[in-house]
Image 1 (spheres, rainbow, N blue to C red):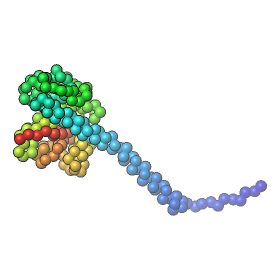
Image 2 (image 1 turned 90 degrees about the vertical axis):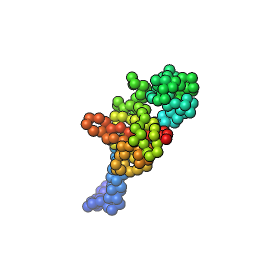
Image 3 (image 1 turned 60 degrees about the vertical axis):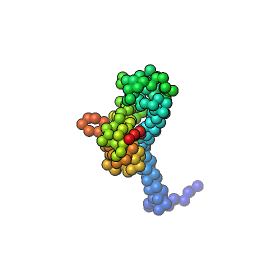
Image 4 (image 1 turned 135 degrees about the horizontal axis):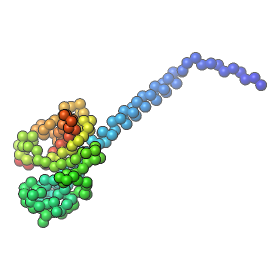
Length: 199
């Protein structure tokens, strides 16, 4: 039995070309999402962690009337002596914690944040009055260290509801909730999250 010869097609039809173009665009978009999703996810985790700790510190302040110098005071009752608070008043008698679950800490009582990057640490400090908005004399900020520049830009932009391309604020004087510094001279980037202010 003889089969008829198939007609040779000289090229692609418009529909075939359109399907290939759509597939290539889709793959490029997915590649872009996967390329940046890690840093965006880390920036989101940073802000969620900031809110978790800031809420815990405000609950701590409501209970004790003082503010801690180190994050370990939130989950270790023994770390609430007068030397452990900014006001130099012991908080052990009024401590109702733990205010957050215990996290891995370093020798200084700061929290390890390896979920952001290897060697990243969260510290608690009081910013200089000159870095606060007008009319505010004191505050507390969480500091995230050892971050990639992309995570710093994403976190600060999301925190302040600005574009990633916007210049990073280095103080809170303009009313920003977050500030940041990019890597320089061998030091990785940082993000500062301001959550408590008082006149």
